[in-house]
Length: 327
Figure: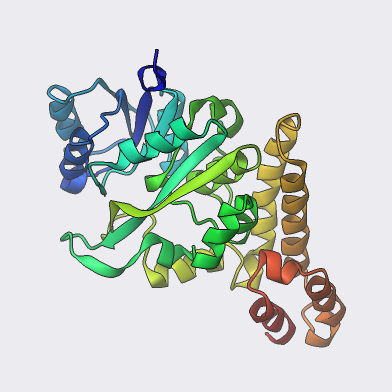
């Protein structure tokens, strides 16, 4: 029996009041050159006709589709948790409700998993568009800082170092092997990391991460989405992650401590170097969060972080150093 015959792909889609754009996304999944083997849709309490659109589509689509409705609103990360845990496929591809997939997206992702059994997660680039399907002039990777240098770093087998600096894996482009469900679930209900950052960090600690440097989705920006890939939105996200606003560094440390604790629970399979690096990330974020108020008193702390190279590995290098010293 061929590998293609035994590999099954599940799509995990989450919806919440997505009636305006959902039909286009569902149709793009139905137009895939490699059809999914199932689509699991978890709705978080929509009141706008989302479920009616989903149910009508399910009645005529080319693959099995199951629809679940949460009893209470859970938020996006916990809603994705519900969708992921119900997937039966060997590969789980995450889907937002408001994007549009290129027809070959699943086929291209599937080919990578089939060619390299050590691959645990695959993600792609995406073209950022506005609500009218017009390109806004930049890609997801440009927005989230996956530069050519960081791509080379990931190709050298060091995805973890890139992800600790800034999560560059957008959930809407992500697919991963389902046997990692036991590691990534449950997803914490609170913390600085949302589901895509959480999943990417954990899988990168024990498996290879590969990427496709092509925009295989149209990532739609619109006023009602929870997170958007805008350049100003990116700055706000980085600020919350502790890259700009010093007050958030302790929250960063707490968030990464949650990842570390989950990694420790799977110590027999994770890369020990990855565990060491996340400990350094936590140490660095804690140090930045506990800087004294007086600038002169900060000097020994910032010098230590500079000479250990943690500013360069886990923050923005000399920019972060200068900010902690002067502001």
